[in-house]
Image: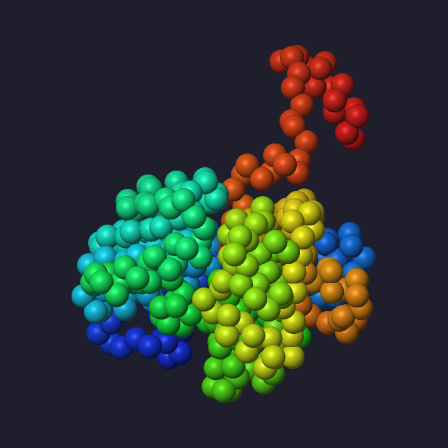
Length: 353
Ligand code: F0G
């Protein structure tokens, strides 16, 4: 049977009824890929898998939560949704609002989101407001706006977002046929790690799995409030998706860490960029820089002998690299240019093979 989207596939775990209108772009069912080449290249004794959520309809994991958030907004007769975003939430909210036939208003930090994400919000027909400030300030503004106007907030403080995002841990368990020993994620506003942990616990309670993974969250070093134990007023990182100084799901992330016996750590921008190009060139998966924080963190901990040898580790790659191609030119060589002549091309080829 064709994949029906996250809500229909996992209906029994989600707060929907027979009368809830379902707004879906058939999100979910994203590839789980074993990283054999990478293992060999790094000489690392771990079984690494990528959950590539960049393969969702708008190119990020946000679609898993947005299908539920928009379905519940329509059920409640809402006429508009609003969010603050570092880019992916705004892209996803805009697409699902378009599908639902209601308005989307998105607040983004001016100059600090990937161009592809801004392009998505615009083409999906959202009202885009750029603020001269960062994500944390934008989130404070939208929280105040929804107190005053009849607009539904679709940031991850909307509980339906996390309910939908739980589906990723169901899929990982179903696709692997077992529960990984470790599950690593990039952490920004901390909604996703909270959702994964909730999902694993509910799947275990329902008897679908028999163990739980150890949760590992990784923040960018310049935007690592959870690691430092205090909000960061001016977060900075090349991984703009996780450029967040005061995560809304702070408590959820700490619970996931502590209940699972895991860790929340940080990785530098240069570690992120190295791993970003490594994943693409060894495994053929083009993820965005923020996504690479998951494997960058795993490599950092591996080098500190953190892992049991041979353990299984799933790294979620949260978004598609196509959203932010500018970054490629910071880490790759310029393409060669030659005359349109066979000999000129042959000369180069002989240097390659
Ligand atoms: N990876 C990507 C590609 C993201 O876009 C985000 C968050 C994260 C990781 C972190 O997930 O916030 O649940 O801890 N992006 C949000 C946005 C903040 O507005 O698109 P998180």
